Image (cartoon, rainbow, N blue to C red; front, side, top):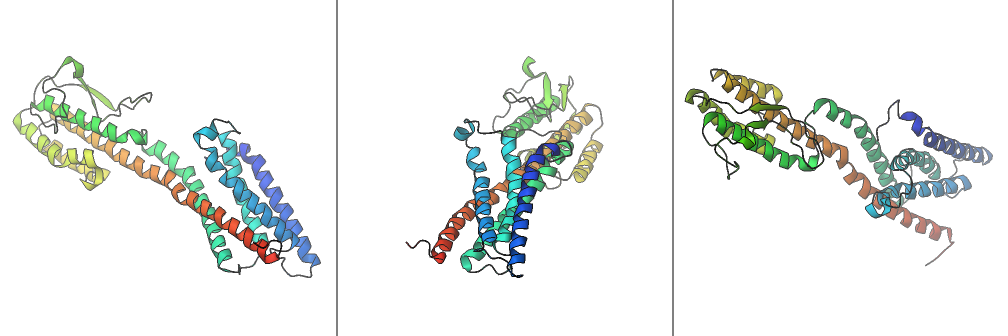
Length: 335
């Protein structure tokens, strides 16, 4: 969830809930500390116990965001998704002072179970804060730096379409077939593709793609001296990069080196249609580079959940064990 000056007012309710709850817990804790003669209240003291119960309730509420996203549960329309996220953020932060009050402001956390529980708790908190920070910066980076951004799941299909366009354009401007695995629909130009989408993200389903450039197929074939270096570069470097990305050609994955590469390729041709063809191929490589950056950014944007959610589930499981252990220790219940 993006938190900006514009969206911050909508967070104020949950911010105030968290601040007032933390302040109330702190006042009660300090008042008990003052009356008890200066010894920090532990988890079994009234303020420590109440803080622990409140922290456990908050943690269980935080976990509810997970089933809230299940399709069947989402269909019940239990509150707005943004409201759940705001509560998740600020009540999650509220759990920090509650847990601190519960263990009595002490760095000694008792037995092994309590130690593991506390390590898990702080790891969950830190991973959640990391995810929140990532959501503040990565989407803005993607909007400003990746104009060819598309739906991540469609990128493999779009790459195949981009390679198909490049192969068809080279065939129609040089007269030499360069397609692999019968990628071309036809060797000769037809009315169907007199206009070729080059280095483009096509329309897929209901998503309107971003077309970088549309050009008519060249009316004259390039001569051999111009065609040869372009075809060689396409087969050796460009097509492998378009298909497989950085692992096929680290050089084309870097914009400065790619610019030098295509400048050299232009220098090996006489100009005109040959230079335009090289520019089309360069634009295709730039689009592929943006796709790779988008996939990388997408992993950062969503990958932290693969750490945060399992650790939260483990935290809840250990929390249940901690509650049972505390009840047994107090002699309230014996299995």
